[in-house]
Image (cartoon, rainbow, N blue to C red):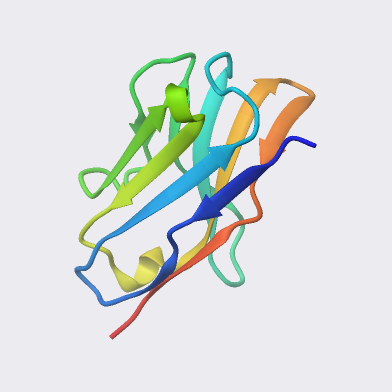
Length: 116
C-alpha cells in the first residue's frame, strides 16, 4: 500500500523554524502535483505551498517569504522549511501528491504548534 509519511512537526516558539518532511513509498518523479496543506482547529484545510508539473513552488500569501518547499526525487521526498513561525501557523500540516484526478495521496498529518 502506497503511503505518505510526514515528520518534523512539534512545538516551537514564535520566530523559530521547523522543517517538515514527507516520505513517499511511491516515486514522486511522475507526480502531476506536490503540495502542503494545513488545517487549524475549527478552520477548513488550506493550501500552503505547491509544485505543479515540476515547476517552481507557489505559496499562499500568508507564508510567502517565510516557507520554502522543495523536493528530492531520488528520495521520493518533499520538504517544507518553515522560518519566522507565527502563532497563526499553528495547524496540522498534510502532504499531498497528485498523480491523476482519481489518484491522490494524503499523509496522516503532523502537528505544528507555535507558542511561547
